[in-house]
Picture 1 (cartoon, rainbow, N blue to C red):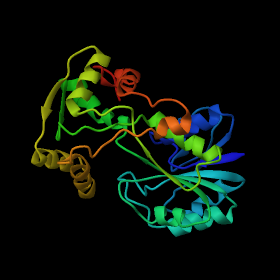
Picture 2 (cartoon, one colour; picture 1 turned 60 degrees about the vertical axis):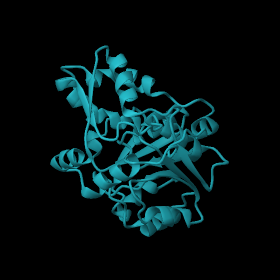
Picture 3 (cartoon, helix red, strand yellow; picture 1 turned 135 degrees about the vertical axis):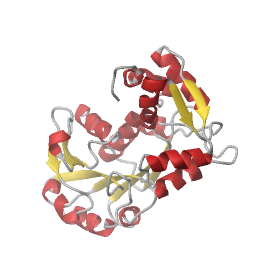
Length: 277
């Protein structure tokens, strides 16, 4: 049985590939640039682009299940060719699909969930991997600057997202489910900074940004306006209790979700002076 993983070189896709390989499955990994994939040995790396459904046809040959992401480019714009992608999957005889949600709904979600494919929709909260954006200022200045310090979120480890996806692709009982994934604990920004400080063995300073400072900084970094507004919407002025821990990771995989402390220990090197992320 062969599984196609799109977005295979992303922070989640890499874990989907790894989990499938560890379980003994054949994996075909789709990426725009196979020469830069650096995926585990055993993965068949092929070129393709979800924004061009015709490029999927060779990669789908002999494939039983497909993991999809709704991202047309590096700015995470939603795909506009969902119907064409689903048609390509059905024509190839694909039976099972997982879909990782994007920043905002595009055409792919409706096309997949409205099809006769056995689909599972995966909707994680904030990725722990997002904390890698702090690596450079921590390495060079020993500081983290973020808005909305008091907002408590249940960050989820990207390996847990990958494990849920791999399970849904390969086991029965997940068809037609939408899985909201979280980590095991609610943490505000200062708590995340403290945990990261402990992992790297040195104190990290924290300064809370105003919304205007956030907008100015993100614009200077080239962040698209829709992503800036999305960040403000999901992290700013949220009602008390808006974010809750869910048991889904453990229910699907059979083990508790990984903590942010574990993630910080695994990635401590990225925050150390003289090291890259």
